[in-house]
Structure formats: structure tokens, C-alpha cells
Image (cartoon, rainbow, N blue to C red; front, side, top):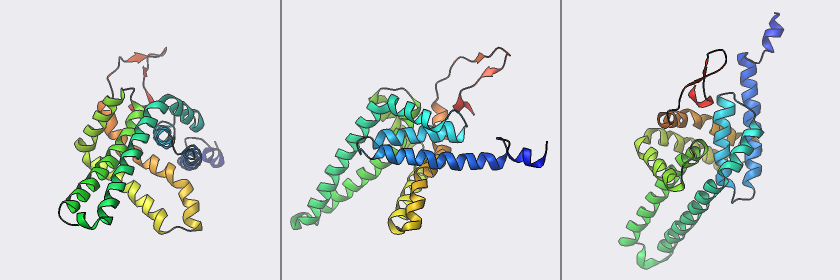
Length: 229
């Protein structure tokens, strides 16, 4: 085979990289479109992670097919959690603003309460970073998902910190350096952050993947799931 032929082989490192870049851009555009209704943002995040893990990282199936499949499957649970988070954040922010505007509560207990609210918001943000990937991977009841999310948040705090810093600095990059170049890059950013987040998060989820009976194909080779790699 000629060098040019080898270059265009799909398993060529250059072609793999180009395919990943294309898929990252494609899933980013789909994600942004599905975030427009606002109420669907939680399910869009869940589907984004699912695609980044299954399709972009492990090379299984296609971006749109898996995004839509995850979106339909996880709509109820992801949306309920997203709406609950938005309501809690709205309440906490309102309370913090009230404490800041009310001169009688700016000092003493007011400052303590504001600090507590901020800690709760931080914990909730870290919990959210775990919950949506968990929803994308496991078929659990809502309460079980929350308990497992809290467990992962504190048990795997280093992984959670990595996720938080990735999301935080990505948001700050867009906020501080907003302009035409950043605007273009921000379209690519959701898929990139989603793809990078699969490395710490998949490492955690793989530990708790239920054991299943090993099956074999007609050739006697073990049948592996995409997340077994």
C-alpha cells in the first residue's frame, strides 16, 4: 500500500485525530441547539457526555444517533434534576442578595449564612458534575442516582476537582476573553470539555460498573461492551 493510501486509512493516527475533531465540533453544535429551550440543558449535558465517551473516545456508533438515543432515554431524570438544581440555585442566590442588601444582616449571622449558602452552591455544582455522567451510564432510580452522585463527589474528590476546574476555567475563558475568536472557540468548547471530562469520569464509573456474564461470539471471542476498554 502506498504512503498516501496508508494516510487515508481510518485507523491512521492523523485520521483518528481529524475524525475526533470533527465529532467534537458536531456534538458541540447539537448540544448548543438542544440547550436553547433551557429546560432541556440537563438532558443535553447528559447526552453530550454519553456521546463524548461512547462515540468520540471509544469509537462506537455515530454522534447524532447516540445523542438522540441518550436524550430520549434520560429526558425525565436529567430534566427533573436540572430543574431542581436551577430552583435551588435561584433560592440561594436570592438569599445571598437579600443578606447583602439588608444592612441588619451584613455582619454576624448574615455573613455566616452567606458563607454556608456559597458552600452549598459549590457542593451542588460538584454533585452536578457527577450526576449527569451517572445518568448517562446507569439505569438507576432518581434517589439512587443522587446518593451515588454524592458518594462519587466526596469519595473521588480529586476527580471531581479536576472536572470542576475544567468547567470553571472554560467558563472564565469565555467570560473574560469574549470576542470574535473566543466566540468561535466557544462553539467548539462544549465537546472539548465533554471529551476531556471522560478521562477522569470514566475512570470512576468503571469501578462501579455492574459485573455481567461474559458472552462469546461465533468465533469464540469475548463480547465486550464499549465501556470495557
